[in-house]
Image (cartoon, rainbow, N blue to C red; front, side, top):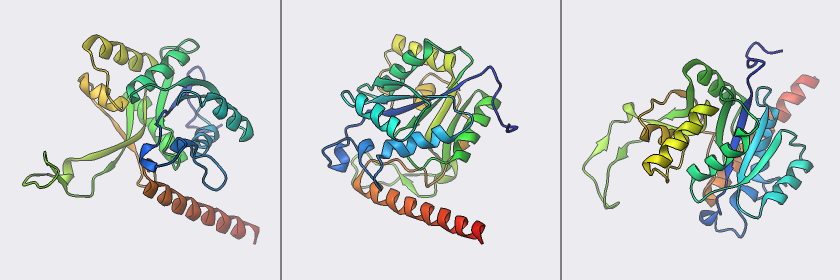
Length: 253
């Protein structure tokens, strides 16, 4: 057993948000169900969590009406850790809350919830591991990468005379990890305060005055929202497959 294995009495549950309709990809089906190399995008994401030894269960918040299709794909691709499929909400916040309601019935306060975008299929095992390690160390963890571009502030989206020093900026990705009780309490507090439209757990926590701790991210951990993103994903997937074939060939010689 790996030395990085979680405490035996603590469960790690992934919540994947996959409630988008795919309007920016100009497709008739949700982007997470688009096939790339004969496999839906959401399955690539599910496989990453299925393969990680420290992930115990998976919950997916899916677009209404697509739950049976997801269950069928999970059976086809042997995603045995998928235990909950719930209807996604109008916002990321609502989708995550729906997932929390489902898993909370069968899990303890100290169990860890790792929230991830279902349309980030290139998440690596290292990113998941580091996120869980940092959560155990600090109580929360958000995958980030440094900002390498110049960022301008503009109200009219036409021009600007003000930029933000990139040295002080981190770009957030997913996953985001928290104790189940901490994330549940944050959602309850948000309801009391009328906070309803946060897109990510880290922005909800920030709105509640909570500090964010960073874990490892990657430029490859892209979020698929446009047709261009799908093309980038195909290229990354092709490079990954070529690397695997090369390593396999070398091992055989």
